[in-house]
Length: 589
Picture: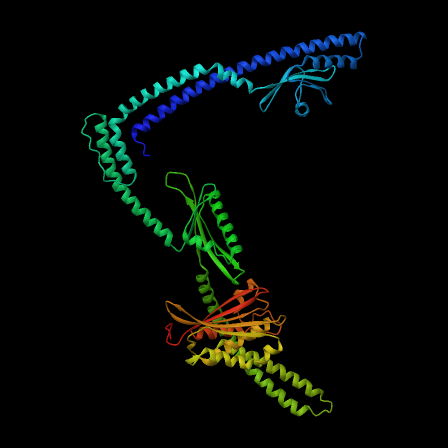
C-alpha cells in the first residue's frame, strides 16, 4: 500500500490521539490499582499490629511467670490457627510455624534469602506482595501474602464507563483529524507525488502549479532544484563509476580504516592478495603488519613506508611487500581514518637480486680468473719438479718416499681441479647454439648418473607433459646444468628415502612459448636465510663441496637465455625451476 501525503499527515495525528487516550487510561488504571493495593496493605498492616499487640500481652504473662515461653508461643499459634485468616504466615529462623497456604515452605526459603530488618517491611516477588513484621524477642516473622492480580479485575470493573467514554471520544477525534488532514494535504499532494517519482530516479518530472502564494514559490524552487540535481547526479555517477573501476582494476592493494583502526574497505587486489588459501599463516602475518602500520600512522599522524619480507613456507621462497600508510583527511577537517596501499614487489626484488648477483658474480669472476692464472703457472712448475724428484729419490725399498710424493701430487691435482672449476665459472666458454631436444639431454644425464640413485636408494620420476621440448642452446652446457642440479639433489637426500620428480611442460607468456623443467626433491631443503646466497661462489653447507656448482649453473643458464628459480622448505624439499624459450618461440632466439 502506497501512503500518500494525506495519510502521512493523518496517521501521526491519529497515533498521537490513540497514544494520549491509552496513556490516560493506563495512568487512571494504575492509580486505581495502586490505591486499592495500598488500602489492602494498610488493612494487613493493622492486622499485623494487632498480632504483635496480642503477642506482647502473652509476653507479659510470661514475664510474670504465669506461662513459659513455649506455652505462650503455642497459645498464639493455636489462636491464629483457629482464627482461619487467609494468606497468614508465621516463621521463625529455623522453620515454618504457621501457614494458611500450601506454599509456606517456599516463601520461608524466600524470606530467609532476604535481609530482613526490624519494623514492617514489604517484599514484592512475581505476582505477590509479602507484608511482614518481625518480633525480635521470639525471633518470629509475622506476615500476609497478598495476590496483586485480584485488584486488576476490580479496577477494570470500576472504570468500564470511563473506558467507554474514551472510545467514543477517540472516534470523534479521528473523524475530525481526517477532515483536517484532507484540507491540509490537498495543495501539496501533487508535490509529494513528484517527490516519489524523483526518489525513484525520474528527474524528468516537473511540477505544474500556477499559483502565486507560497506553494507556487515552492513549486518553482523545486523545479530549479530538480534541474540542478539532475546535472550534479549525472556528474557524481560518472565520477563514482570511474573511481569504482579504478579501485577494482588497480593492481595496488588498498585498505582503509576509521580513526579507531577498524577496517572500512578493502579493494579487489587486496582481497585477492590477502586470501591466498595455500598460505594462510603468511597472510595472517601480513595482515598484522599492515594493521600495525595503519595504527602507527593514526597514532603518530605521520606517513609511513615499509618494505616487509615474509618467508613463504608453502612455496619455499620470499614475499616482498612495499606498504605505505597515510591519514585520510581533507584540508580543513581532522583525520577521519587511515589508508594503506601496498604492492607485491617480489618479482621486482627477484630482478634486482638477479642484477646484484650478476654484478657480484662478474666481479668475483674477474678476480677469480686473475688469481687462478697466477696460481696455475707456479703450480704446473711445482708438479713437474715433484715428478722429477719422485723419479730420482724413490729408490728405497719400503716405498715411503713414493707415498709422500704421491700424496703431494694428489693434492696438486686437487688444487688444479679446483682452479679449473674457478676458471670455468669465471670465463665459461662461449655457447655454441644449436637446436636441442631437452628430453634427449635429460635422458643422457640420467644414463650418466644411473648408478648413483641405486646406491643412495633414490627413486627418480620423470613426467613429460610438454608438446615441444626443442630449444636453441648449447647442448654441452645444458648437460652440465642438469648434471650439477641433480648431483645437488642427490647430496640433499643422503639421509632419506629420496624421491626426485622431474617434470617438463610448456607455458605461454606475452614474450613467447617456453619449456619449463622442474627438479623437485624431498631432501633436507635450504634454510630461508641461505636462499639468497646459493649462487655465490664458494658458498656451500657441505663439508666436501667447493660451492661452485650452482654458481656455474647460474652463469650457464643466463648465457643460454634461460631463467632459474628455486623454492625450498627445510625438511620438506627443494624445487629448481628452469625455463628456456622454445626453438622459434621468440625471447632473443
